[in-house]
Each structure stands twice: as structure tokens, then as C-alpha cells.
Amino acid sequence: TLATLITSHRNHRGRGASCTILTVKLKDPTGYGRIVRDKEGRFEKIVEERDTTDEQRQIEEVNAGVYCFFSKSLFKALGELGNNNSQKEFYLTDVPEILRNAGEDVAIVQHNDPQEVEGVNNRLQLADIERLLRRNTVRKLMLDYGVTFLDPKAAYISQDSKFGRDVTIYPNVIIEGKSEIGDGSSIGQGVRISNSRIGRSVKILDHCVITDAEVEDNCTVGPFAHLRGGAKTKENAKVGNFVELKNTILGEGAKANHLAYLGDAEIGENTNIGAGTITCNFDGKRKHKTRIGKNVKIGSDTMLVAPVEVGDEAATGAGSVVTKDVPPQTLVVGVPAKKVRKIENDR
Image (cartoon, rainbow, N blue to C red; front, side, top):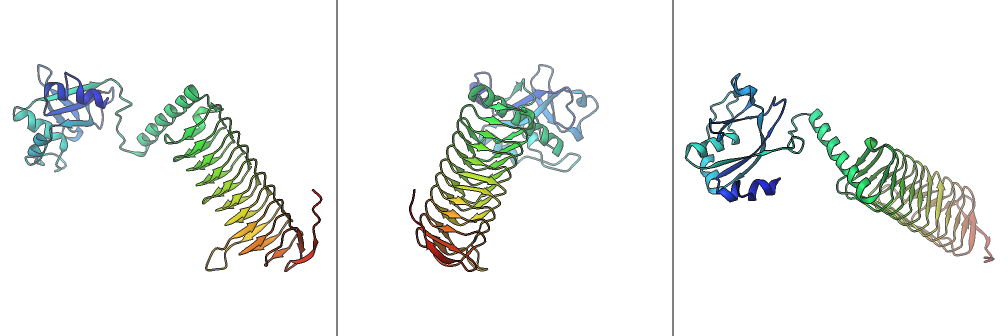
């Protein structure tokens, strides 16, 4: 539309106009400035709604609010603007009339798609335009990428997001910002994803919130999980129901299946985090790091008081409070946790 406005041989550059105005015809032009033409159909002036006569109010051709000016003519005309109108305001829409009265050429391009140039003057119109943009985005994803929307009307997808092939989107999903969804992934009902990257063949189950995070290929997240602030799950990792990850790396094949808070942590591959585990990362002034190695078994209700490190193939008993580093292949239990025995490597 803009290219036509500017470069067409009949319009701005083609005919050397000082000003070209984009217009559109509306069945209900209420609220828009009317385009008044002379008997030969040439531009005469723009009249704002409040200043129209009864006759002018019947005009269906309205100002779309898009112009192209020859800059020297524009700046000269701006200096001649007055505020002789009902609102005592200085209207940019008076500039084309000033140019016409000065003998300069003012061109009109009448557009044929009212929706593209529809104005937004209230919350209702804003919602209508957003609905149109969402519908266009969803339509393109379905046709060009094979994305399946179980209910296209109940999807809120950012135009800046990127999708792979054969993604499935359940109802009431919100995908915001510059998010990426990889091939073959499915996004469950009620999920919100913002500025995050979801890999291939990932399952995001119902009612998860994922913001500023990354989920690598073949992971499962949820239901009711929360990933935020730089959280990252590596390939084949699993985050279960009511688990929160903040600035945490969950290693390849690692699992945190139930009711855990893992903040400011690094967790090695194939480690299992028991239900109710918490990384106690905040001492009232600063955040501290928890490091958990590979093939570790963290018992249910373990409290890991950071800064602390748990070595490879170690384990904690249920309800342990770990305040000191745990050596590799060591079982600790109790409050505070103490070494019980060395774990034999029988894998």
C-alpha cells in the first residue's frame, strides 16, 4: 500500500505531487475526517468530524491518516497553520488544503481495504484490530507451516514469534514476544510463553508459564510448571507439576517431577530431584549458587542451603537439610545432613 502511494506513476513521485493522501470509503464514516472534492473530483480539503456541515457529514470517503509530502512544501505550509476550528487546535489535515490553495498538486489514492487503515480511537476498536492481526497470524501459520490450532479463535500469537513444522496448539495459549516453537512440539491448554525458545518434539502440558527461558529438544514440562529468568532444560529433561525453575540449568535427562523450587542452580545429567526439594538460594542479602552433579538422587523434602555443591552419584535422604558440600558417591541424611556411608558404584 505504501509503495503504491509513493511510487505509482499516477501518484506521488510519478506526478510530482507536493502531497499525496491515502483515503478509504466507509459505510459508517463517523469520527473520521471527510475528503471534500471539487466538481472535477480533485482534492479540495479535509474536514474533521466536528467541523462538518450536514452535507459534508454524508461523505463516505475519509482520511486514512497516511500522507506523503514533499518536505520543503510541508515545512513551509506548517508555518501557515491556524486554529480556526471548533477545538482551537492546529490540524495537520489542514496542510493539504494550504498546499492546494498555493497552487501545488495534491493527489489522492483511494484504498480498497478499510480494515488495513482502520483507526483506533478507543479500547473496542483496539480489540477489533488485535483480533484481526491474530487471525492473520494464525491463518499464515496454519497454511504455511502446518501448525494445528484446536481452536484458532482462542489463540493469542505474537507476530514476532517463529514456528517450526507440525506444531500443535491447544486452546487459550498465549505466545508473546520473540518466542520460538520447534518442529513437532505441542503446547497444552492455558500455557503462556514469553520471549522463550522451545525446541523440537517438546511437550508443554497444561497451564505452564514460561518466560525468558529455553527448553531443548524432547523435553516434557508441566502441567502447572513455571520456568523463568534464564531457566534452561537440556535434552530429554523433565519438569513436572508445580515445579519452578529460576536461572537454573536442568541437565540432559534430569528430572524434577513434583513440587520443587530450583533457583540459581546447575543440575547434572540424569539426576533425579525428589518432591518438595528447595534450593535455599537467598540469605537475605544475596543469591547463592547450588551445584548438583550427574546421576545424583535428591530425596524428597531436601533443603539445599546455598552456596553448596553435591558431587556426582551422591544422594540425600528424605527431609535432609544440606548445609555443606557433599562429596561424590556419598549418602547424607538428617538435619543438618551428615554422611552415612559411601555409595558403591554398582551401575
